[in-house]
Image 1 (tube, rainbow, N blue to C red):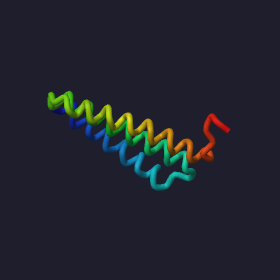
Image 2 (image 1 turned 90 degrees about the vertical axis):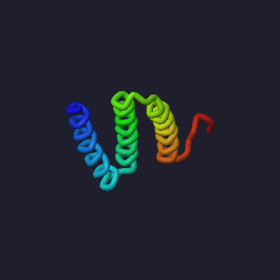
Image 3 (image 1 turned 45 degrees about the vertical axis):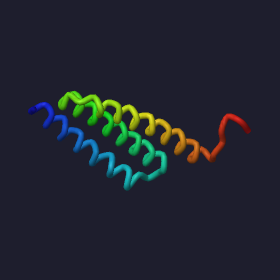
Image 4 (image 1 turned 120 degrees about the vertical axis):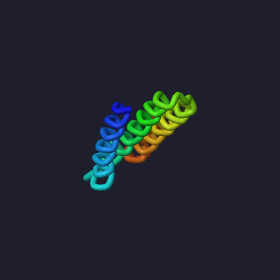
Amino acid sequence: MMELLVFAAAFAFLAVICLYRLAKGPTPADRMVAGDSMDVLVCCAMILYSLYSGRGIYLDIAIICALFGIVDTMLVGRYLGGGKGLHK
């Protein structure tokens, strides 16, 4: 139980740092990286909670959250790049 509290405190600290960068990021790319980091933190927290509680449903939710995070990163990256794809 103590390990879970330590990890929860670490995740909360990292989430506050990411939220600060998300709000005050000097460039949109910094904000995108902070949002992606938040997605990774949420997925890791779900996985750790799944291991703690013994319920596998949280693993499924973490996988779906990670997939949406990848798609989100690709779409924002394409937007920041000016919408230029492989086909010109």
